[in-house]
Image (tube, rainbow, N blue to C red):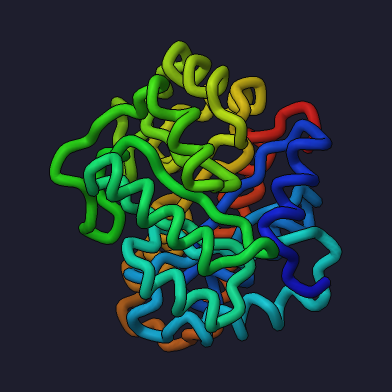
Length: 279
């Protein structure tokens, strides 16, 4: 199936009461593992790439790789720009035919965030889903993160969503980028945000959250959960273990295939945790 718009993934998930995983890819092994898991479970999904992950290949190679693999996949999948920190990043992703984008101006002042997010909405046009962020999510993603985390203020949500016309809202409600063993979703705050948001919500930093919290997220208007560190660790661990077992290992394709299997297992497990009654 060709790539679909992020709108279609959102619509499918909200209609069916599902939560889409949003899995970051950087290379062929990660892409193959993600799609293999999607095919096993059948839940609509986002595959995504941040500008910091595209420095080696560029967005065009990511698009080519993902779209080619999805030709034989029957599950709706959107290709999403993760953490576009500038309008230029949004423009580059759109030029590479991404079908969904995130503009992250959360580290700016409120009015600047609104203005930048609205500009991204205007550039993307009606056919591309746009995610914006309100409240700075803590932790580091590829060594990049806010100087200081700040929770999403429910009092700002309705105004922000209305003025930016975003389709999804990334929120800071105790979630933290990367591995954060003490991270926990504040469900009271998440409920207050849900009550005033006209659009579905997004949770970043899924790799560091306890699995038992995932199955509750669909009840709080969450449509998308981001997972990156889990996948990268699975690949790095597979190669590291192969080297540790045999420092003279030279079969790159064998170890690469093992890493695909490891990544697929992680992705499948996460999708099923997000959707315990559906998967």
